[in-house]
Length: 169
Image (cartoon, rainbow, N blue to C red; front, side):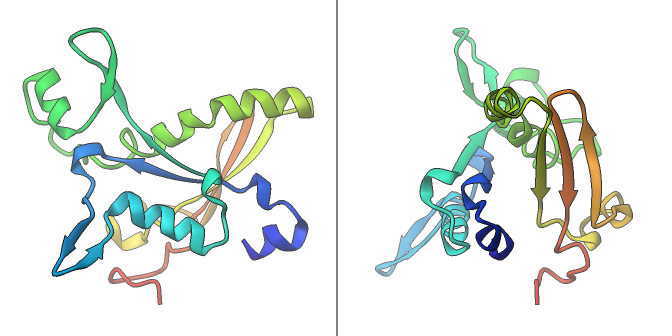
């Protein structure tokens, strides 16, 4: 955000929270003190970095419900839809429920911006993944290109990759 402010491009910075719907930790009030839930914390974090609320978006994965309308997709709806728990080795809250949902939400912006620019849109995806969270993450590079096509070029930066033990300090 410091670099975005210094170069005058804050309006190009957006934050996204990929909600797990019913499975996101909700906010609660206990003994008169409000403890924010995951969605509230994500919005507060964006604000703390200096993003206006309209540049923070909450997205959620959806599926077609029994009546044909789109409905939020969660672990519970996955079990109901397929009559079983997700397959072994498939972590529910990773790529399909988070990264793909956020990337798909960029499409209207990319379509509009590509027409304005006359070239593919460059996106820097910043995530807080840590190397010690999984075997796959242990092999990741802190900066890499993850997608290049005629509409978008997406680079990924993982500034927390070397943080350990759940602490960013």
